[in-house]
Length: 488
Image 1: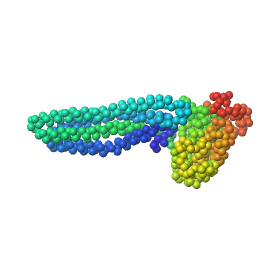
Image 2 (image 1 turned 120 degrees about the vertical axis):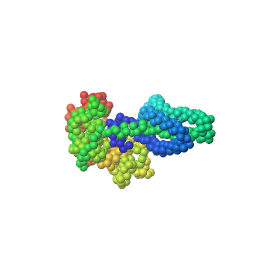
Image 3 (image 1 turned 180 degrees about the horizontal axis):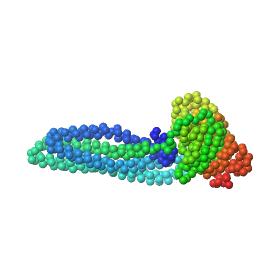
Image 4 (image 1 turned 90 degrees about the vertical axis):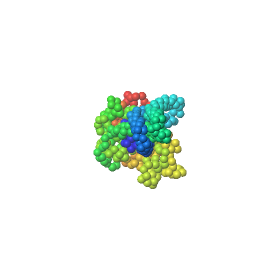
């Protein structure tokens, strides 16, 4: 789990949450089951097997030699066949990961599925996924059962040979009927330890497949090299983008030649159509990705030189979608950090105008919130996100249009909290509506990953030919415009 959390976003965007659940829980559980039983059962089986063979040797060396040879043949066959089911078991695990991923995605989007009548289609797709899982599991089981069937077949042959040999020896007077019965009973007793070892070898096949997948996961490395640990300065952080170019996939640039300088304490309004690169630009500030060309500096420190955890501790983020946990108000605010004092939590909530809301909760800070925020309004959820940033006390705050889906009254309440939040901090507000940037100091307009315009907001608003002034005259919602219409 720790290793997965340390991998960069390129890895996580290429793997579904369901696949990660299967890797972290499914493969490791298979290994824990194997290691908790293998040594005890195999050791017990080997001791019983050895004891039976020793007694047979003491009774009659020729019988002991014959059954020892038979046992060795069985174990040799088992060892030769034990790796047969590993590829199929690995495929079974991969199919299981796809199944978990499908279920996770559909449950996460259940509201949209219901609202748009997508239930029948989801079940149709589920049928295809579960069929793939079923046939893959069946194939793995059949290949794994080859080990058991081989062992059982050899054992049947062994019983027949032992019984025939015992009858032949008794008729010649070489052994007594009691000895013949004892040999036959010991032959039957050999079945239990051999089958026990056989079952454990099947579990070994599963474990081998799980070990391979776990090793493959551990072989993954973050593409973000560790920085040199340069500290960021205290207080508001200046932001510099110096000829930055970036692409998620080679040959498909998202940002090209971005130059930006934002002084500490300034507020920047970031405008542009959906897909223009606004979110990608903010991701670079958290160093979720590294730039392909140029550099990004916070407080004069290149993000690639700063300690990654320290850097992210100095940058706060508020988005439209607030991630809440099935936990108390306290844990949702502190991200489960018990070191944060309750008095500080109450002070922050009072500062943001949520004192009455907290007082209305029956258990105060111990009140449990649902994971989807079902017992909160959209405005309350956004204010909780603001409170998280307050507690973090960052030098740079990034706001991804947190009020775009709120009613005017709630938006006004949020605006007051926002004013308090931005005091003494540098901020970048990703705007989808022009009203949002009325409080900013500077405006950056992105168009197809390039800087279309950058400058002080008031100056750009006064220049009739500026992109920002044209947008003000048009009075449009940016995302409602046709591509490049705002810059025509």
